Structures are given as C-alpha cells and as structure tokens.
Image (cartoon, rainbow, N blue to C red):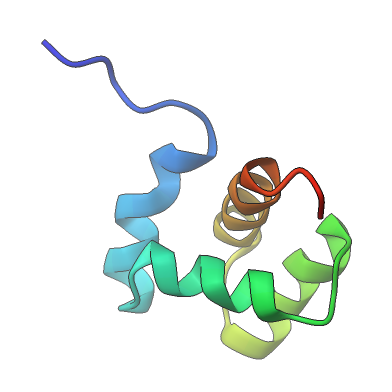
Length: 70
C-alpha cells in the first residue's frame, strides 16, 4: 500500500479541483512571477488569483523547495 501524501503536496488534489488548473500550471506561474519571496508570492496568489491562504502557501512552499536557488 502506498504511503499517504504528506506536507504541501497533500493539498494538490483539492487545489486542482477547486481552482480548475493543474498544479504544474500554478507552479509555472510562481516560477515566472517577478516576485521571489515566499510571503509576496502567497499574497499575490491570494489577491490576483483568488486562492485561499493554505492553498497558496502549499503551492509556494512546494515550488520554492524544488527550486533551492530561488
């Protein structure tokens, strides 16, 4: 039996269902944003794209962890 997904990725199915975009698309938006700081990116996703705080935080945390140079 596969282990349950933990951490920020555990939010991904509900993010895709609620906002109608694949996680890969959200991550690309984050990577191409001129913003670089975690809090700025979270606030941008909330204000410009209507994401809730937890969903925005999970996407940003996961994306920045994948791109340590960011």
